[in-house]
Length: 54
Image 1: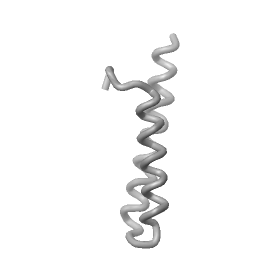
Image 2 (image 1 turned 180 degrees about the vertical axis):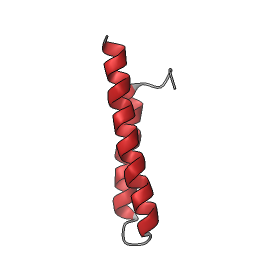
Image 3 (image 1 turned 90 degrees about the vertical axis):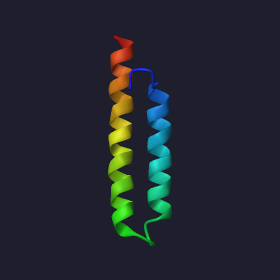
Image 4 (image 1 turned 45 degrees about the horizontal axis):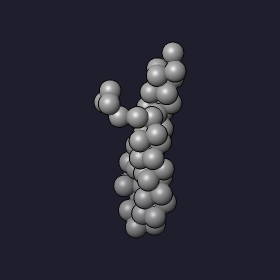
């Protein structure tokens, strides 16, 4: 986790949000799982950026 950049977390969260919107009509439980994963990845990217700028 220490070697992963903040940009990677942001990119993964965008991919998660896009996949969630694509799969929304087909499987609602996967939609919510991907939505929560995207939010978590976004905040991990924010925390990583805050820690590296100190």
